[in-house]
Image 1 (tube, one colour):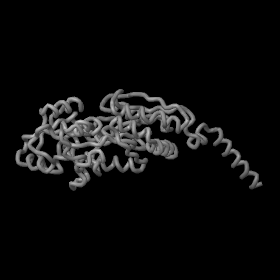
Image 2 (image 1 turned 90 degrees about the horizontal axis):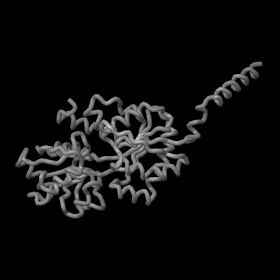
Image 3 (image 1 turned 180 degrees about the vertical axis):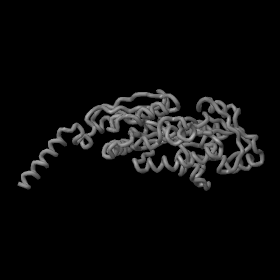
Image 4 (image 1 turned 90 degrees about the vertical axis):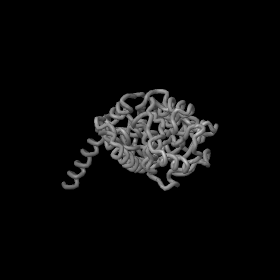
Length: 324
């Protein structure tokens, strides 16, 4: 009798599981189209690199991936939309780090927290550097530091905007060396490029994707990179890490995120597909043409990157008084 009752219970449990629409859904993922929310306007670097990974990822997962732009509020609009979406892996966020590691520190009014999202992966980075205007009285990093210390408050730098990665990279540089250099804010990297070429600002922080060609053409001088290792295309430019400031390695990176409580098997499936895609030579060439270097990091390493970068940004915010 006991065996018959036990068998009946098992049968009922199995039937209930099979009746549930969630039964096996994670294992079968994906079974329908996935939507990527791009949280910055069309035509920008994030939009470009997301469109590069879309076709091969569609092929790898076997379902359509549609791209929807939800720009606004410096990326907060699209980020919040995904944070509140159903955590089934069918709504993902394609974003860059300012929305996650900078915005929470400088804008206490944003409607989401980093913990509202599940990291899937980081797949590319626009590595940064600090450059100087043509005809500057210094020729390298050491000479610049010496000049700036002898002339506190007399030098300035072009910033693409308060709270951008370039702004924070330059502020971290200043704090590292104890320099007094005044920011001059512009509306984006384009105006900064024109300002430094015209000698209207002394220095600028930017990504190689936007201003690296000017270094190669020797129109401006690359002084130091915010990378961990020297870049093969720019072997003569030292890194902040080798100068003794590993915490100063702040770059723009692009990644994919799911809502909190997205099943790990789902996030890992997308991440594994992305890892293979980022090894495809055709994808590598397209990414580099868009100004991004391949920098794949899985879910765990992406979480570590966010934690470390957030701490670094937090220190700058505290010392500069931003966010008050």
